[in-house]
Length: 289
Image (cartoon, rainbow, N blue to C red; front, side, top):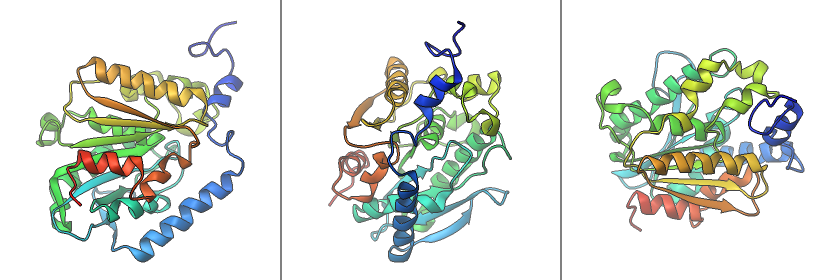
């Protein structure tokens, strides 16, 4: 039987690896966690919501400023397999980081199939460029900006790392002090054969252009790659494959497997100021206190 991808010969095999709800007892409860904790963040933290960073209605971002001026900044890109959710379900990542003195920015973007993944990549690059140019107006330090995300957001963060920032945006070539990606998707090839394909509509060209594992460049930004030990094996393999490519280009990466976490809880650490993820990011941003 012909293979679709690696050792997978059927869509059912690929779906079993990439349906993030399968290892979770109650997906609806996980979504309620994000909604409730994000509502708490917006109610209890200072925030400026729906700031435009581009010309379309989808191109807005939410800013949760740290108390002290000149704070380091973390841009968190949300997941949802490029076809679901929004910035508002992920305000919760600010709960722990703001308490560590880090300003948090959560951008929104248009979703598939209304737009292609190439356009979402463009939007996230535009959002990061906006942050690098304008976050100082919101109390952030543009010299200490980190980027990251979860799932599809991890993919988009990797694409931002691999941007030609100087050539295309007139910004420093390596503008990010650090990056944290959780359960990211760095090789899009298997998803073309999955249940997601009717929504995300991958072509061979999209897979080639938008698979970060194929486009690693030398970059000074240190990266933390994390995933849940309860996730399917493909999520660990995706992170390890990208780590190998990233480090193969002479770059730096660290790994953090979370043994008791699944795909949704792998970013809960951002809600707790003393978590390993917050500790790593704070140290990388040279946060004091």
